[in-house]
Image (tube, rainbow, N blue to C red; front, side):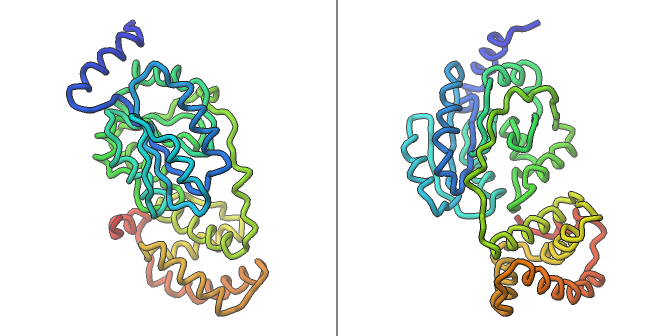
Length: 294
């Protein structure tokens, strides 16, 4: 069996003819100031023997995430700012990447044994996109393959699922089990948002994107079912800003201050929306994707 070192040397020498680096590690971050340094230091300290670059994208944070990222600028670490959905931000990072392969990681996840995982990938799966473990490991894949399938689309939620489905359609997607040892602590304590209006907006956009991607929800949960149906209606609006205008108009018009009141108001609106849904009934979520321009 060809050793990892021999395989790596072959790939490195081959791709150096065409690209600057072997591997681009892309990370998008929004309001991750409390944890981003810990995550980046953990990754950088592991990758001692591989030719790589990091593409760090701040998605218009309201805290000092961008200032922290700026401190990591170096010959192989590039930092950008972008304003858009999570999917568009990931795609922006993909377009900035110069490596033969792209490893997309999350900004709030601690990873272990990345060198060992990369050995396995380059020696056995380098022609494919590979997903392991949890949702906090988006993908590793040849950059050209990600570009060919369109990369990430304009989604705030489930953007990775959308990408995985399209890679699977091309028979270029592999999910590998048995790699739980890659994942350390998931740093999410700083993301608790007590703002009722923002939580409501988040749920509506989330279920809109779940519908667009084609992911099901628990049909026995009335709350999930309602938000899914309302998201189904909002999926005809390709711009997230328009979705926000609709939701905030409802909130402002009612003056509701409690989540229960907001849900009741949205429920009343939902009943009137159902008539529209009956008239606007696509054959499948894919029909909407085909009509939307990302």
